Image 1 (cartoon, rainbow, N blue to C red):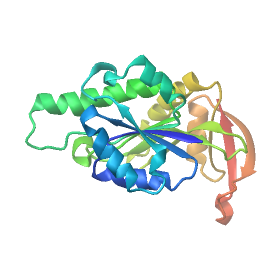
Image 2: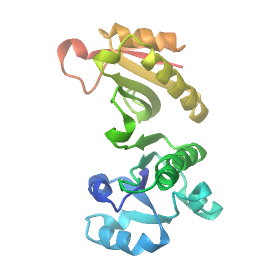
Image 3: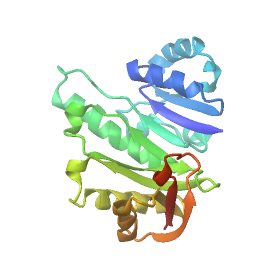
Length: 228
C-alpha cells in the first residue's frame, strides 16, 4: 500500500491528481481540507472510481500545526508522499494573505512532512512565484536495486551546470534523507561521469555497476550505484 497526503485536492489541479492516484490500485489518499469543504470532497470522491480510498483530513494551512489534533496525526500512520498543491492564487489578495497561505502554509506542510517522516514531499508552485526554473533535487523511494530504498536524485537545466547548485542541493537532500533512514542510494548511467562525480563529492561511495531494469537504450542501460 502507498499512502498519499494531498493538499488542494478539491482544486483544479487537485481533482486531476486524485483521479490519477486512484488509478493505482495500492493508493490510499488523505486530503487536507477545511471542515467546510468536507462535503465538497465527499461529492468529488463519490464521482471517481476508487473514491472510497479517499479520506478527509480536517485541517487548515493558516493554523499552526495545520490545526491537526494529535489523534488525527496518529491516524495517518505512515505517509509515503506528501503532495502540496494548495495555494492562494488570487492576484488581488493583499501581501499578508499571500504570505500566510503561500509562505507560512508551505512552511507548515514541510514541518508536517518532516514530523511524519514522509518518504517524499512534492511541492507544486507557480512559475511566476518560483522565478526561472533551474531544475529539481529530491528524495524518493526506489526499488531499482530489488529492495525498497530511499534515493536522492536531481535534474538541472544545462545553463545552470558548473555553478555548484546541484552539489549544494543534493548534499542538503542527502542530509535530510539520512534522518529518515540510515542508507540512501543514488544511481546514474555509467557514462554520466558528471553525476557520479557529484555523488562522490557529497560523500557517497561507489558500490557496484548494474543493468537498469527499465533502461533499454544501449549505452544507457549500464548504471552505477552509490550509497551513503
